[in-house]
Length: 534
Image 1 (cartoon, rainbow, N blue to C red):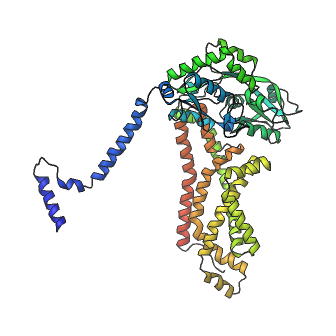
Image 2: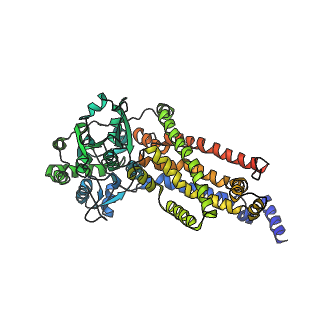
Image 3: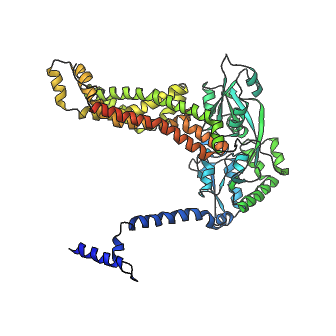
């Protein structure tokens, strides 16, 4: 009755004008959505206005007393790497340089770890103040960021196993290696990557790594022929890889610079002044000599007037034209993703089923062994498993990729199948045995077919997840779809275009699999192929 009374009062209020808001508005179904819209609108305004109200970067650095710079220790020396004497600390020629630059700004330098090819997006998010990690001066990067004057003039150095027949980069373009192409490892997204890709021709296959030392190790192991590195990395690590030597004179040249946000011109100018003092005083040279990377080319830094970008940008008009130009690369990478997925998942399913059967019906010792296998595989990262297969066992990339994914997923499939087998009523096995079937025949014809019906949804989910997990295989030089997106987005600046195209391709892979899963479930539920004695 109270509700009816309130409703009638509300109707009366709504039909007559009143200076006070109707009480029924408090219970209006439009209230919550309206509040949500206002809340989301407020968040959007804060997000949009945030960059506008952000203080000047130079003033912020001096106020907080810290200059935050982004770098990646995975790239190794001589740029930024764990200090061998105190591993909790970071050292490197760029680290020492940043300490001196921060000192001139009245602050201390604060290292911020990030993935090398993602440092500029981190800079744009205002989490750091500058990026310094062997970043080359390129016109693609200059479109959205400011760059300081150069602090190092680099060249590209070819490295190969000692005693080889190739003595220069030019030899790679003239001599075929037993009918095969020479394989050259590079750091993905680096100047060496761009140079090698442009100069490869028909005789060179470019192989991309996430770390410089990974490429050197693979060449020393004999998995690839050569690696092309920035000269500082080659000079710094040549004694640590005794099986390698510098091959021929350096190629090309370019400039390392510090990047700031487009609106942080005052910070950039202050860093320029400080770099000029370090160069003029010889402090920068002493740092270079300490790390064994000083070359005569560095003398040009003192009279620097402004270089032309040595590494040209690949950016074209954008949009459909950009996608049209690079669609072949995306499609090739999608084929790699499909190959890894369809090559590894059947193996994972077969191995997982065998493990599940062994854990449920095998002898005690086998059950313990298989249980340990499952815990070991589930308890260690897929990336580590791939490293073991590729670098320790020295398997070819495709074998290591498919094998690593199959082994990793087999542990999860084993648990899914074990749950499915346990979900089959025990009476099914007893009935099969009573009909004279052997235990093995009962499993094959009665138990396993019923378990397969049960596990179709979770196995399909794992298969869809596997499409995306293939991205981890980029650490063993397989350029699948996600890695190709990263390469193209960083080299052309078309992050949004390639992100949309990559998402579309992943959808084209996973959606048909979801449809097939639902069709299979419906077919089995409606009296399709059934498990049972025949």
